[in-house]
Length: 216
Image (cartoon, rainbow, N blue to C red; front, side, top):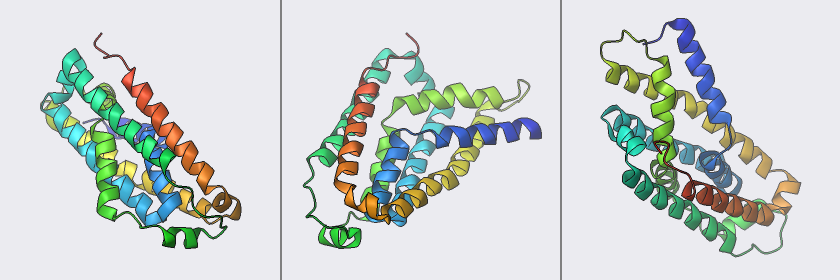
């Protein structure tokens, strides 16, 4: 394990990385805008659960396999890209709400997604992205002291710490988006925000589809 100074550096770096917009943040913000802070927080918890899969998989060698095997990386990459494209297409093709400046009325007119569905959507958004596994393999070992006896255990502990630190950041994204959704200007532009979110999911999916295996 790192000393206290390096541990603080690890925590700070983790917060900065979690503040960086990406498909996970977009997933949280989209659900918060449409269904409120609780939906966004649940979306973030689903993403956190997906990160735990990558952490434990990397600790037992699956992450290393993705980093070195072109076939394994490509299969997961295309599945993840297809999933992001599917989410984006669903949002883009969703029916525009009736003209209204009352977001609560619009939300009431639509069938809300169950929180379990939102959670699992966040989970799969993260799990099906092989870049997350590669990230953990590249980032976490930098903070493991060379003389550490059980490096796999140290990797898991740091990965768990990274994940727990991500929860308040993800919740902050959810709360900020839910607050924005109450603004009149945002309410009037919800249809266009949905379209922008759908386009961004498709862009993230295409970006993932054309990502090369880091081992190449």
